[in-house]
Image (cartoon, rainbow, N blue to C red; front, side):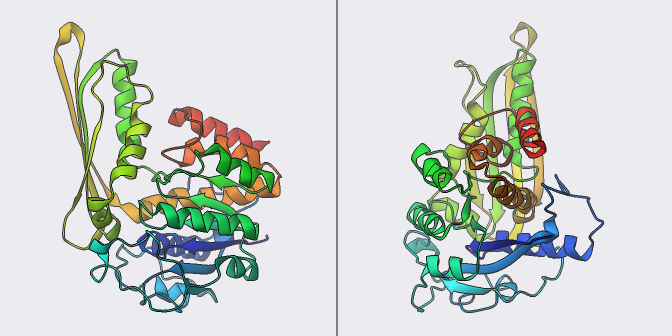
Length: 349
């Protein structure tokens, strides 16, 4: 089976989880546990082939990709030892990808010259570009998206920066029969998804929502970044939660805390309060704990494969329809159940 050539933008913990996950399923080809789709078209997880990376940290730039994923500040539990790739990590443009508060603590900025992104994408015959830059990196996201477009690559926007939700961007990719997926990738089973399900259950059962809180705690670089740049992430999460609420329901409150202890572990506390029959109170408190990067990689392996599948089938315009299953802020919203049905229907056509 032909491989899917993948370039990663932002070689952080998420990239580490993705690459190690591909190694795990490559070494265990009969293993299907933990996969939402063992095959998408004819593509298996082990058909992902990493051909390049871009980063700004001197500990990663000019290193082989399979080595760079183990450089600091990456921190998440190991799924499996990475396979070896010839892929290099190239110096990408910093732009708004690194804020002052994170320099010299989490990020040691490289002094190397910025590489020609389009040239690398063409040279490596990249099929799909995966955007994993820090949340809030709008300028960097747009620049990489333009480079992907110019190089003839599909693009997956894993952060909340509005891209796939902007019709002009979608049309640019569709015009070239390229796939654009976004925005803000879901975890395989994340807190926002669980919160959304619980809130929808309240509404299904005729319960007014009095209070709704989602408090996210983590110790990786992205959580530290969110202390200063939480706006787009908060907006993405709130949009995922509010589409089915009534006007008199309390709006969800979403907050982020950096624990100060380096860790890939994430802990999210959910609290929902409502009024049932006779306006009597009901309350749900729940906690979800996971390795956040690994949880996200479980969705990303599907996103990469569906991007290539739709490109192969010349169905780039269907990209906006599959996003609801994969993304928190898709171009077209749907319930999680509806989104899965749409996703599977498109794959079966």
